[in-house]
Image (cartoon, rainbow, N blue to C red; front, side, top):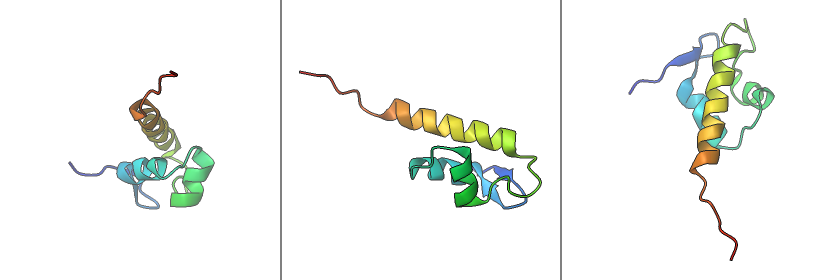
Length: 69
């Protein structure tokens, strides 16, 4: 599967955003600082935020559920 460019200005892909989330990025401001995403024209902000939110949700969903004994 090919990566999809989310931010053309800074060549940030959906894979870059998912990797940033996996590395601990939790906010859009952190994503911008880490990748430069949406720092130029801003046209990608909506898609970048959606991709980040989806990635964070998937990470949270993939965590094992701990049962108190």
